[in-house]
Length: 475
Image: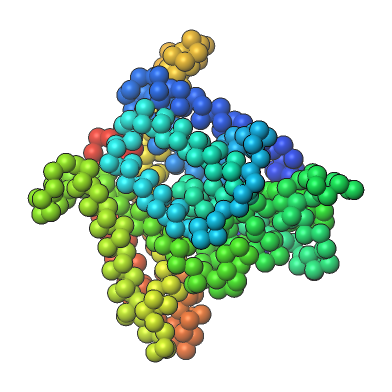
């Protein structure tokens, strides 16, 4: 998409996005969906393929989320219903504390992100409607509890696992919120985009809040930490904020200091988030195929563990900690950069190149479940409408409606994996040119080899027979 493109200036979509109540409308719709999913998860049939909670969350939401992130950007955070509930809660209890300085990193979110990935398998959430409903309740309760105590978007910025997934994935988006003209920002004295717009003669009255994630638009780079809330668009008195086109993944190679973040190569917590994003994709996909069960049994025998939860935990420890550490260490050790550059610094420079590949794996995985089960939402909604509301108007559930045949989806998965791999290889080349312009090939080849090996593993995973849970619902 051209860098001259500004979606906010498009005739219909732009006007809708600039509408003050657009976000509230989206949040209200998703809140209704979340409440319905939770109610059906708790009180509906405890059969995964017949329950709205498991079907909509683990099949449809994940697939639609990934496609939106790729095509447009972080529009789920735009429509996040938890923010709506938080805003309502703040009317009754306004936050008055600042998040502790020592916790202003991504490390808490990294731990929670990993916990979600592991818990999904350990507790078989794809097949547990009640467990899925409880997860939704806990998520809403956590957002409400944190953000009615601490000011700003504390939960979004430092804790939300979904938010961190979206932040990393939106690096591949063709759109970015940024200023149209830096010259206009230089003449601005009110900085409403971050402070918010105040009522004339009443500085304590806020007419429009600014960026709650403390991203100062003139020095904002990329989509990291941007929830696409559009508050900056509403607050800017000069109309100088646009939803502009850009080259996808370009921000992964940009070493400029960025507002609220600094330089990416100086943020090990964000690097850990990107690493978890990539290897979490591989592990989440691997756990759905039949060979994973054999590996679990082998690990249980080697380590002397009893119980699937323990063997799964060891498997994910190896896949989310040991394997990434080895890949980064070997890649950095083989990278030919000027001698003063440490292995740590080399890894911090190149780690973000893994993100396009990781997103390709997530897309390939989620597209399988979404495309093979896309029509299951119809009979499950028909059934839920009667079970929850006694409303038979939607007709008799059409349980034969499912989706594409798995064999027809496999070429799509391969295409997504190839695109993600090529994106990572291209990112490696750009980083190598930046770090070692004299000999970029010598700097790039170890990471290129690593990415190709990881891609080969991902292709093998996608070609393996899947457990029945993967075909009927998710994995």
